[in-house]
Every structure is written in C-alpha cells, then in structure tokens.
Length: 322
Image (cartoon, rainbow, N blue to C red; front, side, top):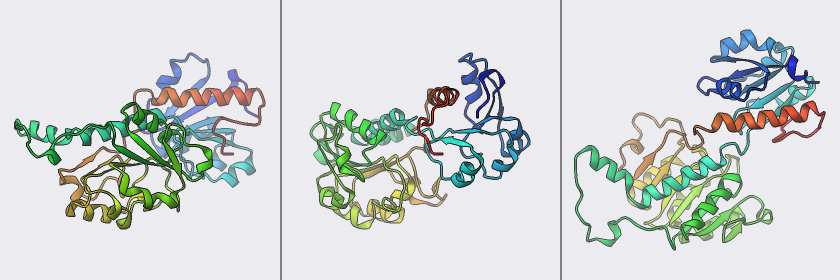
C-alpha cells in the first residue's frame, strides 16, 4: 500500500531534468527530494516511497529501497527494470509513454520542413557569409510539401500525430504499424511492415517513429534504401538501431537518396570520424526531439494521476507496466 499524501516521500532522480522544481510548483503538499547522480540515489533511496527515474535506475534498488512502493518512469522505455523482481516485492511501475508524443511529432515535421526548404544549407551559408543566388535547376531548388508522399513507420502516438500534422501540409500519408487493424487514424492508408518494401518507391519522405524491436531493427537497410527515390529523404526520430547506419552512409555518399535528418544515431553520438558529421545533405539533432520546456510538467501530470489512482486503490495505472 502506498502511504497517504501527508506521509508520502518522492525521490526525483535525474541528472538534468528539473523534476522537483516543476513538481513543487504544483503545491501538492507532498514531500520530495532530488538526486543528481547514482551514488546519491543509492544513499537516499531508502527514504523514498516513490521514485521517479529513468536512466539512473538500477535493479539493486529493489532490495535497498526498503519503503519503495511505486516507480514512475520519466521515459517511455522500461527495459532497465526487472519486472519480475518488482512484482515479487509488490512494487508498481508505470512508464511515461506518450509524454513527448506531441514534441517528437513536431520535431519530425520540423525536420521534414528543414530538408524540403534546405535550411541546413542556408545555415551553413550564413556561417560563411554566403548569399546564394537564384537556382535555375529545378531539382536543386527548395520544395513544397503539398502533394508529397510521406511514409510513417510506426503509427502509434507519435506517428499518428505526425500523420495529422502532415495532412495539414496536404501530404499523402502511408502508415505502417504492427497491427494494421488498429486503424489508419489520419493516414490515408495503413499496412503491416511486411508491405513496406512495396511502398517505399512511392515516398518522398520516410519517417521512422517506431520503437526499436527485433522486427524494426534495421528496418531501413541497404535493400530498403535501394528502393527509395533518389530525391527522397529519410527522417529518424525513433531509435538509431532502426537504421543500418553503414548502409545509410553508403547510400548518401552514392546519391541514392537525397538526404537524411536524424534525431538518433547508432551509436549516440556518432563516432568522431563518422562521415555523417560532415555531410551537407545530413541534419543531425542530438536526440532532443522529445525534450521541451513542458517535459517535466507532462511527466508530473502522469505521476499525479497514478498517485491518485493508487490512493483510490485502483488496480490499473496509466501506462502500467507492473
């Protein structure tokens, strides 16, 4: 059982996020403290009834955090948690799935616009004080999104919102998801991943918004890149492992596709000698698609909803894992 509000203590564990500051602004009256590194978390975990964490978590805390009854993950990923051990100790776990769906979808459409409007080139030219003249070659000019085809691999929360944004730009959207029966949402059509190869030649943009699973690892490989138009762009706001990076580099060097916008790479960051850094047709953002000024508030909203459910002795949590 989770303690009542006036007896509860929350530990916010993250190296950078301002979780406690944003939580305090809610004036909940709930006691909390914040730790910034794993050593401090180890020292103070025994004080907490609730731990709000992500990468700082380790499963040794299951034994040492003696008061712990609930973990609210700061991220959607929960691979780092030993679910069996948590269940054995009666510790509940919920993810933050969907917390950054709006942010990542907006980042993806921003990357798509950046490539279509050649913004990386403009920024590079600005740094060199170059004013580019008018372009006669139609293939080299900035482009419009209206009428272009966008393939979205992963039509979940993020991909579904991206589809809605893309339709606002009059794009044709083809979605792919594990279970097409779950619906197309705002996409014009939806298919299983097995049909991806068939549709890739139609795409002007291919956006990855899927989780990294055995099925989606290297979903974009040399064969997939070979089926894309030479004028097409790859946009990855999913996980670096969804793309065969060596194959992507080869395709970019050969001009097999027009370019790539990457919010994630494999590894992260790319190796210092990776060709991706210096490619004019590549835009890299440092896995910040989900990071906005609202992130902490969004996580705290899920946290408070789950605490209220626990106080009401409800069995189901929002984004329940254990």
